[in-house]
Length: 262
Image (cartoon, rainbow, N blue to C red; front, side, top):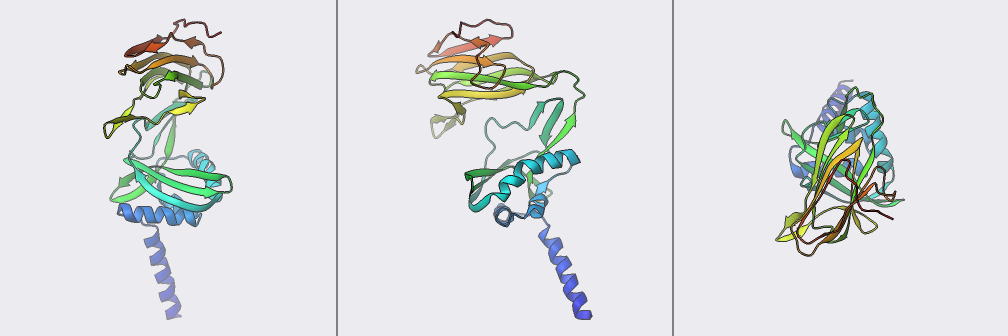
C-alpha cells in the first residue's frame, strides 16, 4: 500500500510539472511540437492562454483548429517568427470586439502535412509570468443593433501593386477603424506579404462601409488602379480609380464616383 501511495504521488507531481508552461523559447518549441504531434488537445489547451474567454469563445476557437489538428500526419517544422507588419491585435465584426487574450510578441508557425496536403497552423504567442504561451482571441459584445457587417474589399491591380502602401478607414458595427499595409524593407529590398487574387493586391475588411482609402506610391515603376467592392472579389466594384502611374497617390472618400468599370 505504501508503494502504491508513493507511485500515485509521483504521478500527480509529474502531471503538475507537465502542465507548467515552458520557460524558454527552446522548451516552448519542443512542447508545442510534442503536443501537436501527439494530437494532444488537452496539452494544446494548457499551452494556450485562455483567460477571459467565454464558453462560446472557447467553442468557436476549438472548432477552428481541432479539425486541422486531427488531419495532421507529420510536423515538418515549428518556428517562432516576428509579428507581421500588418498584424492586428483587435478586430471588430458583427457587433463584437475580438482581441488577443494577452498582448502577443511574436508568431508560432507550425508547418504540417496531412490528408489535405500541407497546412500551416499556429498563431500569436506571449510570455506571461515567465512562461511561454500561445494566445488566442476573446470577444466582447458591443451591443450593436444594426445590420451584420459584410466583407469589404480593397483591390490594387497593375504593375508594382506590391510596392504601394494602402491605408483604409472604415466602419464596423458602428465603430470607426483604420488599417495600414505597407511594404517592408528587408536587407535593402522592399518586400510585402499581400494577399493576391488573380494577380491583384487584395485587402479585405469586415465592416459596414469604407470611409476612405489612400494608396501611396513612392516608386516611378508603378502603374496601378484601385477598386472597391462591398462584397468579396470578384464581384463588380462600386468604385474604380483612374490609374496611378509613378509616384503619387490615389485617394477615395465615401461617396466618390469612380470611372466606369464596364
